Image (cartoon, rainbow, N blue to C red; front, side, top):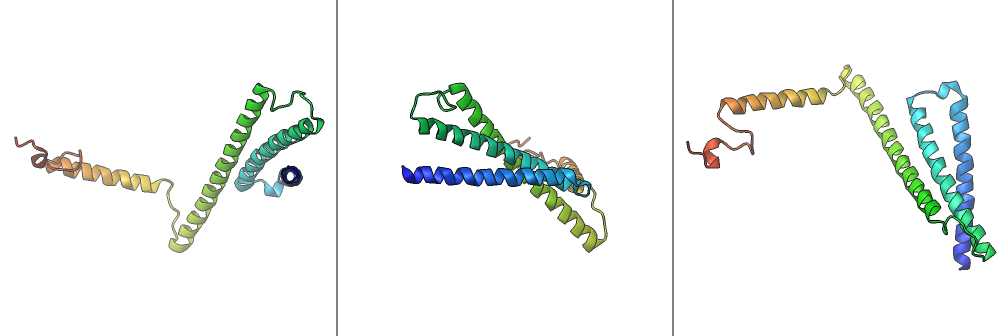
Length: 166
């Protein structure tokens, strides 16, 4: 039991340090005008999701520590069904939001790197969704060829091979 208590104390200290660093980072991003761009907006939203998760975890852990230290039957978050469920739902929401903002940041950085490489290597500016237009044109040409040559598009097999001999 002593190991679990020490581990929880270490976790609370780590979460407190993380909360301090995240709030400091948010203050820096919000204060300096030079840092106002799309990438830092994504970072700020990611940090807000992280702050939400850390605050909920700290609230749960500190509540558990207070309830267990008193050795009483006082009502904490764990003993109140509505608060317990609401806090864990919010914790899962914050965790999911955090991962989604990480995904958006990765997607944004991928697009920045890809577009810059294409412009640098080929000297062209790629059109947005040009691959969708290309595949759409390809599909229309394929559909036209199939209809002209008496092919149906279901499974790509000719009529003669599907049992329709007429």
